[in-house]
Amino acid sequence: MTPAPIILVMGVSGAGKTTIASRLAERLDWAFLDADDLHPPANHAKMARGEPLDDQDRRPWLAAVSEWMQARQRDGAPAVVACSALKRAYRDRLRRGVEDLAIVFIQAAPQLLAERLARRSGHFMPRSLLASQLAALEPPASDETVIVVQAGQTPDQIVEQVLEWVGSRPSRRS
Image (cartoon, rainbow, N blue to C red):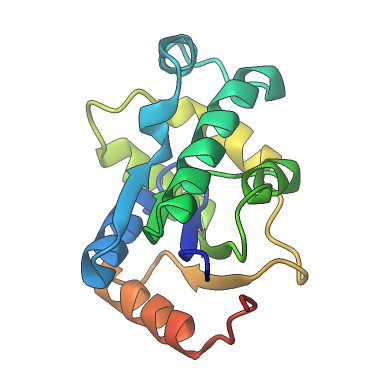
């Protein structure tokens, strides 16, 4: 049986992960997860205080996201996940147990990110943590299945690029 595809939409806060991933899931009629919803309350509280998460904070969260993706594949339910996945080690953790994970990396200029975060209200992630996210970011490498899209485009333009890429990329699944 061919495993259900999983697409991970990644980037720093303010890049547009949730917007792009939710629209992509809607267009594909696939399940959607905003990985932020799986953060334990202590992580939300820490970020709301302006304290960046460390690897220890992220460990149970990444495990929960990975388990969710694995369950979708086991159930034959394709899915799109919005998750920062800033470091290669985090993406490697998410890839464990998930076959042929496709990554959409939303790249954005720091000024655009700062402007977007300044306009956002009611989110647990304060603008003050943008610098720590940018410092932690390890863009996907050439050995990762990835498309890089630019955040300055409209969400519809980005979704169309991703749909074209998804439709044209050869499957590594047998």
